[in-house]
Length: 146
Image (cartoon, rainbow, N blue to C red; front, side, top):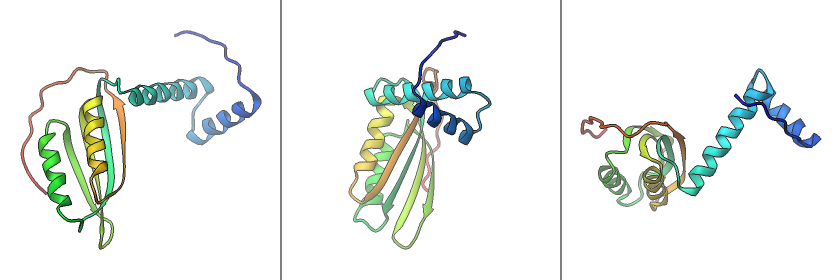
């Protein structure tokens, strides 16, 4: 490990200490390491330079939207190598939420997520990506609809 010295203004230090307490960190170093990793990962994701990653795609959609279910299934079939599992939740009479675990190259995962979120009838969506630090491995998959 390397030891560094940084200078922060009082307001930023106050915010940092509040976040450290809120998240339950034992010390500032642990918190700053985690915040730095998160910031670097976010910057990398925004630049489209992520390598192998795992991700959670969460979106809410109107299940009655014409052909949306078919379009979503078609998109998943065309990207079957990325999807690991999906949780489907009925929120009310009109809306459903799906949470899909994904694994693949960051650019491919982001492209897939963007496509799903952009579908007409999808109201809200977000993808959270985390690097694995591993190379892609072959995956065995079954085929089912639920």
